[in-house]
Amino acid sequence: MIESDMENGTIRVRFAPSPTGLLHVGNARTALFNWLFAKRMGGKLVLRIEDTDLERSKSMYEKKLIEDLVWLGLTWDEGPNENDPGETGKFGPYHQSKRIELYSTHTVQLLAENKAYRCFCTPEELDEERRRAADEHRPPVYSGKCRNLSKQEVKENLLRGKTYTVRLKIPDHPIKFHDIVRGDLEFAADTIGDPILVRSAKSGAVGGSPGVPVYNYVVTVDDSLMGITHVIRGDDHIANTPKQVAIYEAFGWKVPEFAHLSTILGPDRERLSKRHGATSMSSFREMGYLPEAMVNYLSLLGWDAEDSKTETFTSAQLVQAFSLQRVTTSPAIFDYEKLDSLNRHYMKQAPPGRLAALCWDYFGGLLPEKEEAPDAVLVWFFHVIGLFVPSVSHLDEIPAKAAFIFHMDPNLARADQDNAAALAAGSAQTVLNELANHVRAHAGQVSASDFSGWINQIKEATGVQGDELFHPIRIALTGTHSGPEFEKLIPLIEQGVELNLGIPSVRQRLDAFIGV
Image 1: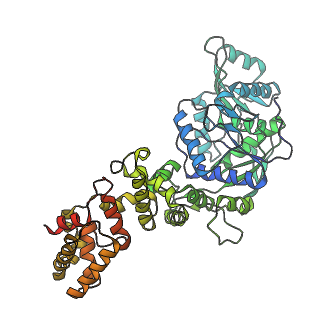
Image 2: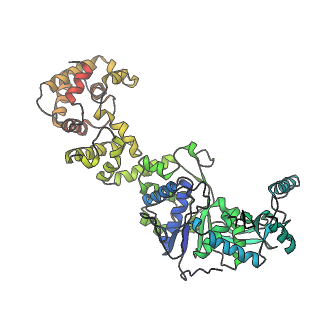
Image 3: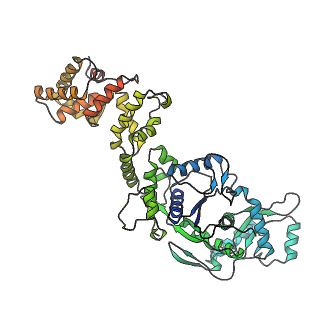
């Protein structure tokens, strides 16, 4: 047996995703809780890639997974490197596909010690066992039919080239383990059955195969050899745990501590899925959620602070506050509105320049390539984003809010039913004609003070005020009767005209709306 040279006394946890899809909310929460626990306890976080499913595992998913972890700020101490194909750490390889020989070595050991056996039952025989168990209202576990085959019977089956699985002999006593979240758990041996360790093995010089080691087996071997002290994962793994504990005990290895996190449900209390909305970290990132908001929100899915009130935390504050003892067993409800609220909170705190940089690509076709953009365009865009951030929940909503700055269609504005009442008022045309006269008589850019002065003059000259005054003007300039303050908006429009971005001026907008 290959022994782990785990550093004595060091807490070691792992995040072990499969590169068969994107990093979704549940796995991201698992990664975060492992990271928080490691940081809080001064331990190590291991990233291990569980890629034994060679057909479904894709390098692009692994790359995306690593990008998402880095985006969230969840750095690891051992595992695949972020920016090169190498690995860091002394317990590698950190890809399970590169550890197959190691699993084979351990399988040979278990067979030699009579703690595992070869099972030659066919799929049809196993199906019949399951049907019989269902008819008799028994758990659908393997009967152990091949457990007591003689050495001669095993030898004959191997000589015939029969396909087999390798099964662990579950001891005839309850399997017990402690869960930090749920307390002491116990499973009767007859509800577990002899679990498969290796599938589809076959003897013979031609067509022979050592088989494919299964999840419960390889994860246990890896966790032990990598010195993992705490296994923190979703509660869908509780049923796997007694099988894994039995494997630890068969090898004489120390069993790690377990902490199973509650299920995450959608607002309708069904398991969270795509039908509820975005669920992958890459989707949230593309939508313009900030990583600090995502980390903060994920931390609240099944955990709460000691005072049960505080809900906003920086990563550093989370590390100090986090405790597995405050992880709950109740299902967590993914609340998109709460996530939006946290994202608005962090957007208000974020430097405007950072937000502008994140938003640039959303305006493809309206702006030059960022690397080629003049400083004046960068500064102007910085102010555009700052103007609209308070009115959105995530950054990808800004282009729709800011679209009128780049282009305003007067025909669409007039046809919009939301604008009908304001434009139908008898004073609307009068107000717009008065404003147009002021603008046409003005030379150069329109400033905020110019515009404000004209509004006051129109108010005095016509007696029109309030929404009856402002709504027609706003519709003519922006296409809608609500939006940013004119004091901030007018300078941005006029400055944008000078940047060769095709932005219509205040005068051009009025002329197009009321006709020259």
